[in-house]
Image (tube, rainbow, N blue to C red; front, side, top):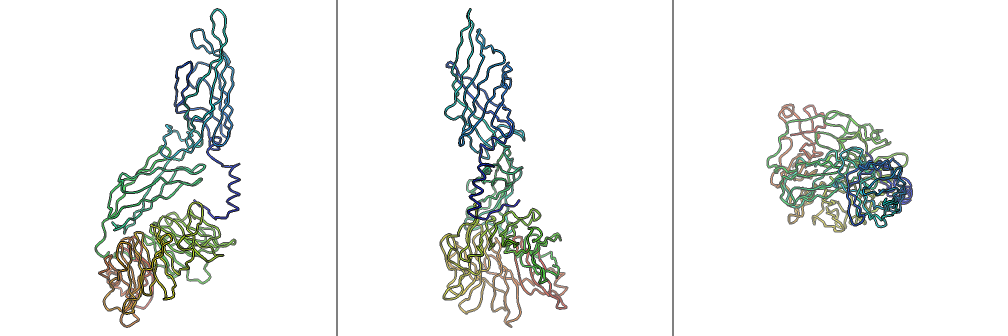
Length: 593
């Protein structure tokens, strides 16, 4: 489901004023909904308290009026209480004045003939875990109604003691709690995405999760309550925006956490749970046992899990990039997004694809889920270009008409990133912790840097560039060492300074290409002859680097394939490479453990 944000003030104001007449607030939901569920009511008459609760009060849709039969409360009377409803702000007022069709005997020769009064109630949005005590799918329960000042009632009748003596008795309304509105969406499902390469980290880290509702969220959105059995794992309730069915939430893990814990979610009286744990760190190099050749008509540019690839068609006239799934399906992204041209800026570890779609009106930043590509864009920002996005689905975008600064997108729309307002980096990456990796042009040459909030920190004193960033805060890049040779490095907050990585034997320089959440670095080195390229995979400790050619499946080795360059590393340890066969034919293939 597409969530469109454009940040244009005039449209936002127009939407605000239109909302007053259309889908304004929780009182509007009470008006639109059917029935009101009475949970508790208490009145005082002549010093005595009377209480009742758990009754369904009938109400037609698109009105605040109620017609409540007395028999609904077990009273042997044909009275129907006609309660005329009106509103003032978030207070609903019901007034009634009804004469009983026949006298009602209270006993002791006392009869009621008329009831009248005013009931006032505050309306507020119901949180996800509030239990409306209602199991029916048609039960109203997204608005809670509670007693407001100004409520009163009177009963009139007569008492027979030889003669009839009229009376009017005040009735104090002491308590009123009910639920109304439209059916509160039930929690349909919940997942937490744990990247395949993720293992305990030395610092705080985060995971991303998703909740899905059975129906779109009502006015103002709805909160899904979340909690972790392990109190050291941080998680907060997540709000599903109005008219949406899904939202993402964040789990914050403490250093060295392995789990497990259980995350509970609740909405609409439904509770779901999911078990979360982190795998032990991989200490041995993965063994590539599977491979897939890509069609020579495409040039691959990004790699997702399960062998899925974002590629460009070799035809120069092509105006879109394409998703090639590991199952062999092909999706032209311009057709998926209804655009003339699509350029993908990147992918992340949770399977999101983000980029810019161009149509007659101009650019539109988008984010969509690769596992549900047919659903189209999950986020769509008119007039913006996507730069990057993190594993939580948070976009960084730029204004093509400005060119200065980058903007972080939240539920309201794009807002200037405080640390990137004056920077014009040549490379930008963004992780789940909110860190931004950039390459800056300085007076001394390019420098790899970390931006967090307003803080900007250069990672190396020598010429360098950032090439990759994972979601546990490890920056991978390439810099000039003391011998003025290019070497890959890793930097993180938990270590002192950058750490140079080992490279395969017999090479004179190397560059980092990618890094996954386990800290494994993919790179390409140059041999001593200055021509031969040696793609390699480096271990997280930086002590060992193994050429990819040595890791090829035996069938490809026997067929004479050589790996020419490393292009991308997926979270599940799949690697995208360019290779050459014995006849000199170059091909792209995906290697998987």
